[in-house]
Length: 224
Image (cartoon, rainbow, N blue to C red; front, side, top):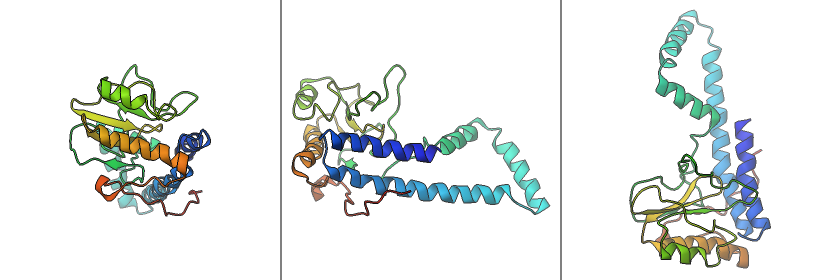
């Protein structure tokens, strides 16, 4: 069920942005490479759990039961298992939507789930999906958001995750870009690429210099 819900949400926000002409149709090409891998891993994990649960050897059953009793008594294991089963631990490190900046800093990386902070609405919540900019509330960030990105990005920047950094987070809550606080050209280029795709039907591809792994030629059929 969790897999199906995430499949639907992953596709829904992308369809919404394309329908609103905030992004071009090539945004949809990211669905298959992101979710097909998740589906494959879910099937593998289900097979492993089934194999362990249906052991017939009495000795192996005893070992399984003892190990399970000890391991699942640990809080860290409980949390890790819950995150795995609910699929909140899933990331998209190889997504074609990721922009890998050459500048390293702390905070979440592209493809990782962005932290949800207390009292802050989740990115993408509400009736209209938007990307969100996590950066210092400075003239540079305000100027950037006042450009052509109003339909694509939230109108105001959110507080950055760490000093000296800037992040662009997708409506699904995953980091799309991470850069240093003054790398406004990288942020501008990334958002412009999304917006230009809507106006010109261009693929969401970056130049080799921008180190954005794009696999827009993958099969468009979604994972069932």
